[in-house]
Amino acid sequence: MRALLWISILIPSFSFLTQGQDIGGNINIYAQVFSITSTPDCNTVITVNSSTGFSVGDYVIMIQMKGAVISTANDTNYDYGTIIDLASVGNFEKKRISAIAGNDLTLFGPLGLTYNPATSLQIVNVPQYANANVTTTLTAPAWDGTSGGVLALEVSGTLTLNSDIDLSGKGYRGGIPYFYTGTNTCAWWNPRAEMIYDISGFGGGKGEGIAYMLPNFICGRGPQGNGGGGGNDHNSGGGGGSSLVAGGVGGINDEPGTFNCQGDYPGFGGYPINQPQGLFLGGAGGAGHANNNLTGIGGNGGGIIILYCSQLDGNGFSILSNGENGGIGNGDGGGGGAGGGGIMIDCPNINGSLTISATGGNGGNTVNSATGGDRCFGPGGGAGGGYLLTNSNLTGVTTDFSGGTAGIITLSINGCNGSTSGAQNGADGSIYPLPTITSYVLEGYNFAR
Image (tube, rainbow, N blue to C red; front, side, top):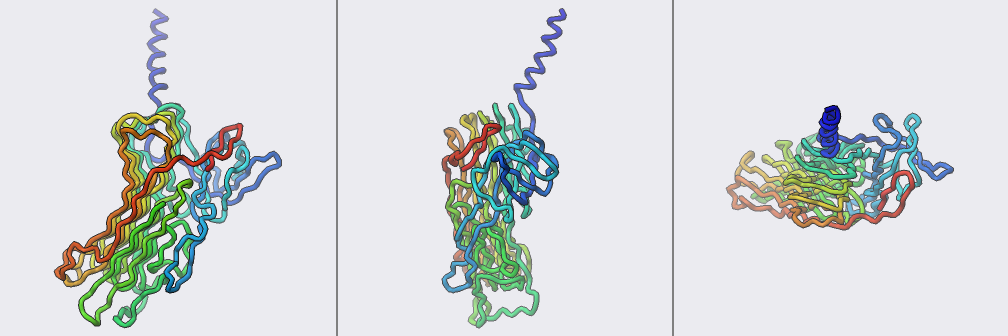
């Protein structure tokens, strides 16, 4: 009798362990890295803004979020925003904490890649599970310019989806339209063709990307690396953000009448990153030009998802990192869509129905009836699709890395209803192999590309 009692107690305990831990919401901890030094025994010490929540033995992802070098030339070559040097942006690796002293974290072994603490370097803890069940939507805080935008976890056994993993819109932040700060000087003889403007209202805000914005360069049609450019005065559309592939240019504003303000200089689409060994947030969409409403905002890009597991059971659910659509221009230019994010899945076995999606956002439409139905305001450009890094067999898995479609003109009586007015779609993303493992350490492996 006593033996039967013990068996009845043990059976539910064993069942609980094999079923795994229920997870959902935000599970990661983030810290900004301020400095990196090496110890005499070849370990690495990083100083962070806060060590709260981190413990000795924790695995962390070191990942460089920003700091690329782009052209800032404002000339007729139109090369503003072209990517000159990625620097360390997109570099990432997995390390383990060996000691904590104040805000100094010691990591086992040397780093496998280079990083720059002066340009948005963060660490993210990697929660460890024997088995895990996603029971409510698993996500992460949106990128705020310093931290966030990344989900990472590791499951030694089976990761089971009973809800979605979703980092859509958690990446780089969309451009903002601005009203004129002075007199509206829009005139047919004075077109606004520059690649850069300050907050003057002559250009919509650029979408955020892999490079820092200079203080007086935050508006105008030049893209911010993978962030779409803002539409220029008058009422042209914002450019779509990019990922590894390009975003689309915004649409022009065509107003009838020789002496009316035209909008022939929409935002350029974000430039492609062309580096399938790194992990990047989706580039944000540029804002449409506005002088009536502030609704044509650029979309926010998709975030970064990092999954390690032995087996992934999809159960008909989805892993998502889609870029947002651009905002509708209500009497103004439409916002550009945002680029899809980067997803890495290091799981040898994927079972059951699963959808993996990192699509580019659509460009924002324009509603022309707000200030006269005979106008053809510029829609936003579509964004580049995101990407997946994996070596897994994807048989039975539905994938979608489509680029976003260009916005269209609506409610016009001037023959342009349904037209993109020159706005373009974003390019389609793709699937690439896992990055190469370049280094190891004994106490907890170091994953680096």
